[in-house]
Length: 171
Image 1 (tube, rainbow, N blue to C red):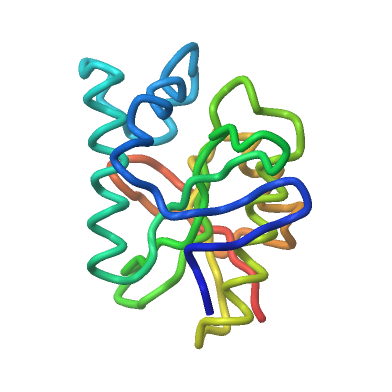
Image 2: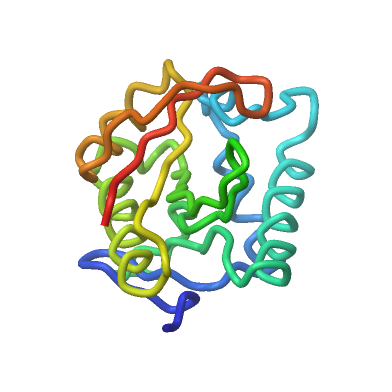
């Protein structure tokens, strides 16, 4: 199992580093969906990018998981992040398939490709019978990706002060 070095048809996944902070600031440019992620819009994009990547580096240390850098194979360009986030939900340990893409890479099939790769890795390498995705109830694009990844709504709950549907797929 090498969580930190994965590939799909068009994408390469790798461990994030602090060197990715400047490139991740682009995620916050013209992004009208930050409210789906409970982002504090009063903070600078530099602060948000550093905080986001620092949280992933902490997750690597604590659980061996977290979001990975997602790059285009053809040129190595950072287009987003994707990976597994361990969650505690309703008293149960779960593994979340999570991803975020820079706005200029939306609607190109990359979200689905990321989600399917992470699902494949999870079911091959984790001792779990279910993977989930937490999706804001109004995030139609992520709902579409979850459905293309074979997921369906398990239940609705509040997460990070937002109403989310918990999508899931069984092994």
